[in-house]
Image (cartoon, rainbow, N blue to C red; front, side):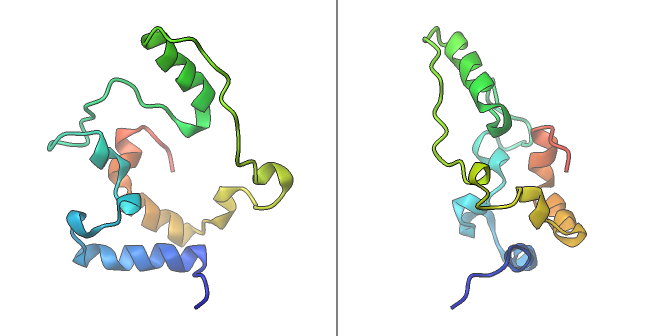
Amino acid sequence: MRTPTFTEFVKWHYERRPIMKIKDLDAAMLPHSHFVSNKDYPELTINHVGRYETLQEDFDKICDILSLPKEKLSHLNQARKYGKYPPYRSYYTEETKAMIADLYQIDIEAFGYKF
């Protein structure tokens, strides 16, 4: 069995969405706001959202909040640095952008992302 392309993967999830219920979704496919909001989401029930894009900076803020010493986080998976994979945005077509924007609209709004 071959691995699906990114476009095939996105389409498969998008086409299954109308028949899937939240309880049936793999946790990796749930909107992330599902884990950090109450029943009225997208109202978040957390004080701070750490972003991967600013991981060290956000980690430092959390250390400050908790009065913990700051430490430099290691970067273990540097695949792009070594040219193994292209930048993630290059995988998206206009069609898959629209599907992802629809599937994860609640996350895009709740976390202030632009897609």
